[in-house]
Every structure is written in structure tokens, then in C-alpha cells.
Image (cartoon, rainbow, N blue to C red; front, side):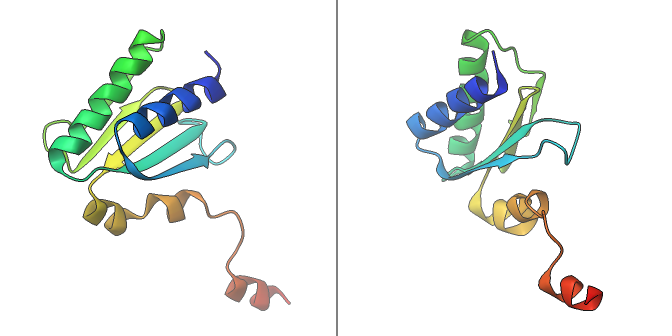
Length: 118
């Protein structure tokens, strides 16, 4: 399965599971860990766990066995590693604290850095 097909499967599953605030980050060229990161929120620890388990199950049904998963015990932050796509499902408070979207989407220097160069 191509990375884009796997991403689409993940996004469809997240939508079906009523995940909130889904963000897709193309991290090719930024890390060798994966090509795409998907970040989503769940409404409770039970919802976070359920979303992550369903993503892993749907991927496996499609022939993509997850390399691993983490955080299914606590449910504050669950991760499903599908090799080309890594899925993070978090409670909103945890997501706000770690702000993965900002961390991985930094493509350009900040405006202050550009001013220093001029």
C-alpha cells in the first residue's frame, strides 16, 4: 500500500471514530522515522484508546501490520506506528502541552531570524 493510500485509510478511520481536530503533517525530508504524521484528539482516555486501536485494526485489515503502538494503557497519548504513517491520538490538554503540529511544521525561520539576516 502506498503512503498516500495508508494516510487516506487513517483519515477515514479517524473521521468514522469521531476524532477531533485532525491534522496531517508531511514530514518527508525532516525525519527518517516516517513520511506522514497524523495528529488527532479524543474526547476522553477511553476515546483515545479506542481510536488508536481501531486505526491499528483497520490498517491490519488492509494488509499493513502496525510496527507498534504505545500509550494504550493510559489513554492520554496513544501512538500507532504504521511505518510510512505515524498516528498520534491525544487528549486535548496533552496535545496543547506538546504542540507536535508546531514542532514538525517549522519550515521557515521566524520573522525575527530573517530580520537578523538583513
